[in-house]
Image: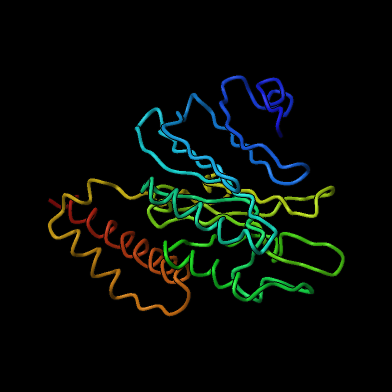
Length: 259
């Protein structure tokens, strides 16, 4: 990926209005390429590392911003600590809603591997990173593992999102795509559930004008008791609050109509 230019990008089928950024490969390994539609998003800032490429994007119409990090985690155990330190520095530099996606080259728990050996300390370091920043690990439809070689299987590829990112796109989900050449399964993050089912839920900012709405949201959040990993807890709490909001909005609409 050392010779990436607009000609190469166009050869991949990317349209002329798309911008891009990349981190070159080291021989046959590594390399990250990010592209985005400049008619929709503008690059606000960028952070490059050995194992990650992070871009802060601002939406043209409403000026909302979020951070995306593409990652290619190291294989060598000695370098894994450097990988997490690199992502921590990105977080220290930018507090925007965050989505990280790519090949982490690590699992977060023993059940995500089959027929291969992983260091428990490295697994714990990954789990600690997720817990520290309260990431939500989006489940993947259609695949339990994303990497396979012979009898060995692992879930090395995933998307991690912060709760405030999920508020921006609450109906997002990931699904596995068909692969034939690589030993990795491509993962597609789809933010547009309206193409696949009922219209997505959207939080109406006007609701905040109702008396005690902030307290109401806090009470709903606190009343939902969930045990488990941080990503599971946050996900279930958000789902609970979303359903409470749906119920409240229907009742409030009838009250408003009766005035």
